[in-house]
Amino acid sequence: MLPLLRRTSSLLPSIFSSLTLPSSSPLPLSLSKLVIMEIPNSGLSTRLVVLAQQLRLYKPPPTSDDDDEEEQRMEDSAEKVVAQVGFPESATSAAQVRTAERFSPKRAAVLICLFEGDAGELRVILTKRSSRLSTHSGEVSLPGGKAEATDANDAETATREAKEEIGLDPSLVNVVTCLEPFLSKHLLRVIPVIGILSNKKDFNPSPNAAEVETVFDAPLEMFLKDENRRCEERVWMGDKYLIHYFDYEIDNNKYVIWGLTAGILIRAASIVYQKPPAFIEQNPKFKVPSGVLKDTTLP
Image (cartoon, rainbow, N blue to C red; front, side, top):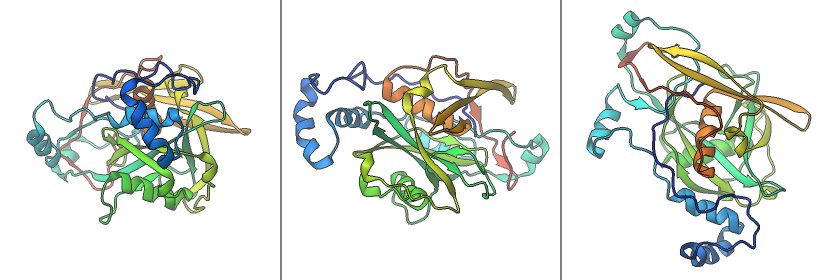
């Protein structure tokens, strides 16, 4: 699981220069009435309501410079350009790819569940996967999984999986936006769904032991800082890119957040805080081969 090129897009105008402003700070006039109306029903603090409104304005960059019809045509084709790709695990030769069946990535979604910490900082819920799983065992990930035929949309996939994995009731999550797709190393087209948890105290984690070993949280802004971070350079079809690793410790437990999860959180933090990371991402644009063998992982 590792980040490739995310599509370049202009960030939204910043509503606040900081998401941890004192609660007494005035709200923009354009949002003041809306905030007053929504707070009683949503249970969100003023700052979280403003954040929700900011994120609802976000539109994922198009997957093509052409119109929507061309974008759909590209998606239906096997050569769709995606924002991210998974960490390389094994190589597949060009000859194998040419003789393989047409590639059509399966869909999945993950939940970026944000909440306010005790100091007013934004934090994100993460999991450490069970060491007994056949894929990504023991790795840190966001709650989520493959889409099912009965899921109405990506938000339902992400919140359903979060309930199954960590016992997070979907009614506690205010879904505000979806990001552009990422491609996992197992060729899943992953859609990050951003949701806001109004009150962390309402959530009592109950991890599914078959899938999740631990539930913890981390400050979102750490994914923009060049602290406790390292990276590795890799090459795919002649393009160089970086895999980012973030070392994190909480409650005397140490975690490494890397690859696809790190890439998604770098992107989410950039959008939320309206600024780029303090380090070079080096995310080259990649095209998925038109055909791949069954069980192939990207090199």
